Length: 210
Image 1 (spheres, rainbow, N blue to C red):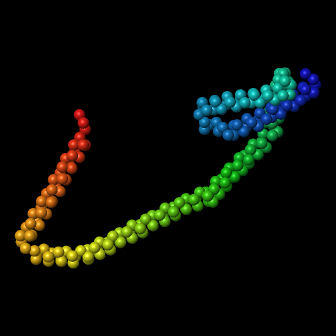
Image 2 (cartoon, rainbow, N blue to C red; image 1 turned 60 degrees about the vertical axis):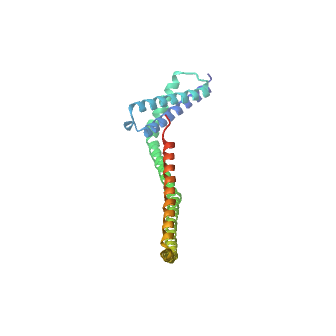
Image 3 (cartoon, rainbow, N blue to C red; image 1 turned 90 degrees about the vertical axis):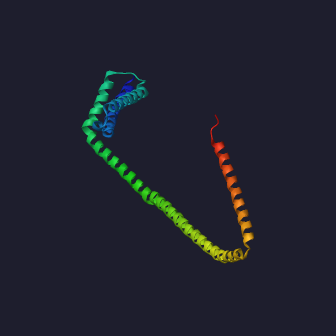
């Protein structure tokens, strides 16, 4: 390994140590460890350390083909210590500001969506249903009124006809009246018998076959 390669490796590992500190603080900020179940924390920690190890090894592979030296671990430790002592406080403040900015942008977008899209659409749907309901009630009232008028007109028309028919009925001879009554009763009896036959036939059809 040449001297320049060793120097680049040292700088890369110092940078990876500082990056590890950044990612560790970020991970701790979003994990909220006290509020999580132990199994969830364990799984998250396992994945975090695996990803960090892969990132460090990938960087090491890019700069010196993955050769491990003792000073590499010292460089990682130095980078992590430099971050902890020099940049941690500044980074945490910056991270909080970024989080607050993202939350503010999200709330603004959500509020804009509710005001400009969601609420107008809901209002239009409610208005449409109100119009349909109003039209339905109006149509029902109109149909009901028309039926009442038609029934009243039919009643007015049938009333004199009924009286005229009653007068003609009273003028008919008794023998003809009896004949008409017998014919009416016979016809009514025939219709009643047909009705009873149809009812019995329908009941037979409804019975389950054994």
